[in-house]
Image (cartoon, rainbow, N blue to C red):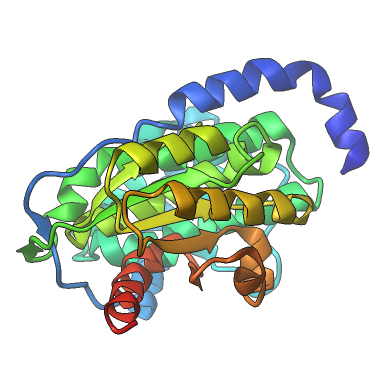
Amino acid sequence: MVEQLRRQGETRNYVAGTAASHLDFAAGRPPAAAPRKRAASSGKALAATIEAKIIPRLLVAFRQTGAASPEAPAARGESPAVVEFSRIVLSGTLDQAVEFVEGLRSHRQSLGAIYVELVEPTAARLGDLWNADALDFVKVTVAVLRLQQVLHHFGLAFRREIEAREHGHRALLVPAPGERGSFGHLMFGTFELALAAEFLRRDGWDACVDSSASSADAVGIVRREWFDVIELSLSSESRLDELTSGIRQIRRASRNGALGVMVGGPVFKDHPEMAARVGADIVTTSGCEAALQADGLMEQLRTR
């Protein structure tokens, strides 16, 4: 891994700048009416549909277009659907990725189930391949950008899948202090925040994403505007102390004296107990669970 980072040093500034400029398109506010009910996960049906009908058709399309297959063979037990979608976002086009998802929707699969069973696991697989040195920085960054473009493409349809509700809650999603220029954040933190924002908006939250915010930016935002919850994404344990200090500053500056603080990212998925250490209220286990966890945190805050 260290040697790989050294070899890619010359390309980092250009690619990082490109990623930072393009990976923030999820920022903004949802329509006034956003949905409430959650579609039930249909993982087994989704997997069966993908394996029987979608993957064969996409394989034919890939052979016809001559798309290169990345050096990322499936590991034992990996979902064939996730492996195939990984290949598409790595070596195919956005149109092919959208076609894959549309094929699932045509077989009555909800976008909610597709995000849970396919899109988020694909991002996790890309992270595993990066950690194993099977993919370089540029490939992974472009692939994660393509996943975010898929979220953007289906954003309105996703929010319309379930019944709308209005509750007036607002959430701010930003990188943890020191994260915004890091490899981990550029490749995965931005996607996780974008995915979390999609589920929050569908749940009726006014979710604002700033994937390039610094610690000072986050403090300034909560000082100017009211938020019920803030989520901070962290990819490296080396920044735990910075995050602890940053959360203290955010709480002191916040217009909401009872601001809820959620933390996410690889560090907390592996060690959820660290949330208490940094002064957060809860850990977000995945982007797809963000709305459920934010709703639960609001209930906790009301009873304090």
